Length: 415
Image 1 (tube, rainbow, N blue to C red):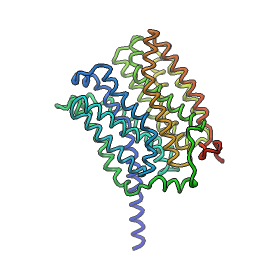
Image 2 (cartoon, one colour):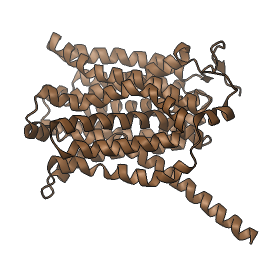
Image 3 (cartoon, rainbow, N blue to C red):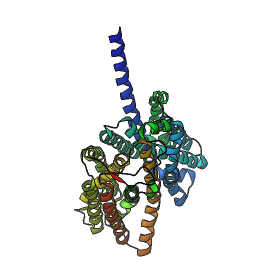
Image 4 (cartoon, helix red, strand yellow):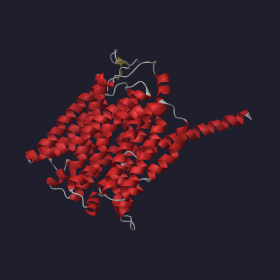
């Protein structure tokens, strides 16, 4: 009888483990798709709702601003009610936002988009800490899995939104609403985790000494990670915004430039799985971080040079660099911290600053183009940013952890 009970408990434990992994995958699937699904539909939305180009542009910048403002608050709410419950609430807000932006007119579009930004902001920040808490010995592979599914669903949403809108009478509203399905499935799969959620102060009592508080904003290592995360976000969102127009200015058709943008995003996918696994096995990730900066420099320099033979290679290099940079950023949140809550706080700090830069980057890039009437100066600016990524990444990649107390300097991990 006891043997059967033990077998049943083992089966249940295995089921819970797979449900947890599936839950992480579904969260990842919802962190980009609601944003990328709208890009190819913007022209339809603008025409239907009679929006100006400027107002339509805020549909994509509004979530980035939400990320920047709300990211620091996610760990604090998780501290009060548990990570599991906070992630569940973020998925719920996200699902409501996706549905709301698809129902009515202009007001609901923007309110729904804002709610989507809130939901994704919390998921972005908490998932690295949650992985550190639940999979402490598998951080690399779980980060890789989450990065792959996030980018696969982002690409699918970008490519399928227009075909879905042409089915029957769905239109752009039905197409956008379709992407609420992964959110609702995620909510259903995540429900069992609500019974297991610990308040973060209970987790802290297990992970840290009482009374210790992290001093992220005074830590040079935390700022190196923040710069690395923020500047790679700036390059990614700037290139996503402007690459097609740059390519069209040197003779590519709109269709060809779109496929080259797809090629860049496709190049990101395998890297987001491979790099975390490699990084976890290395004592020091400075070499990987430095290589990331070099790949950005080479890719952007190729676009600046404008040779049609080199452009596809350059675009792939930018995609590989972006995948490396994002994956390493997520790994640093876990590898350079000592507890799940500290990982979440590091994630919140880096992503708040990072998405603020991401929101500014495309505007600054466009302004430089208008000022100089050339793409050379903006691209040289991004190459300069890549050099800073190289330097910040070299520091962030060193084998250290962020100091836990206000008094101590960052300590080096024991071998």
